[in-house]
Image 1: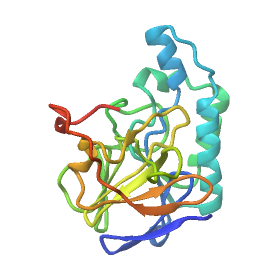
Image 2 (image 1 turned 90 degrees about the vertical axis):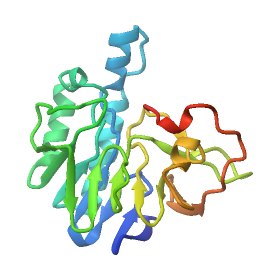
Image 3 (image 1 turned 180 degrees about the horizontal axis):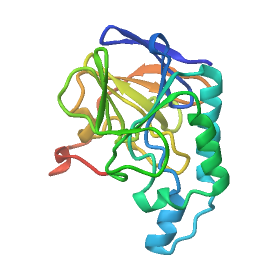
Image 4 (image 1 turned 180 degrees about the vertical axis):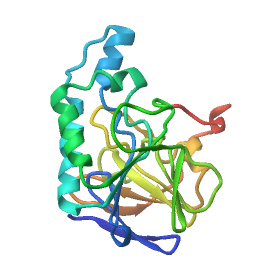
Length: 231
């Protein structure tokens, strides 16, 4: 899998190159920010037409991780759909793919800021999910052991190419990259993310998951940026 193994709050986790998180001891697979049907939501709200293939690509990547890991539990960590109406526009073929992935396993939908309520698919809908020392929620708070998403972190090794979606973690907090094909990202050194971590490490996604320390940004902090953001 070319994954990176990390120890977080006394658990052994694997950051997969795809951006999914695998917890072998629990046979638990976690993904964040799928943003399914984003092209539909953009067209509906702005009239801008994007190629409508991102949902199929995202679901295909998720299916590949499920096939490789064979989890008993899958957690979608919020913003699984680009909004609640977008969930209703999922094509019959894509809905069938999603239903097939859910069969025979526990499927947990965590509420996000884009999809703050239940959708018409099987599974359990929760604001947060606790498992052992970890708590899974969409947006990070101050609780140790948090696994969250929302910020779509990305990082570039200084002087070594363009930024990639990445995991960010320290002793108390782990933030997943966005899994969706049409999602942007917030640089790991942005003041909003820097305020959440104490000397974080980034795990870059791609063909191989690569761990690197995050070099602090030297840019000045813009007024008001520490109040948060809404990817």
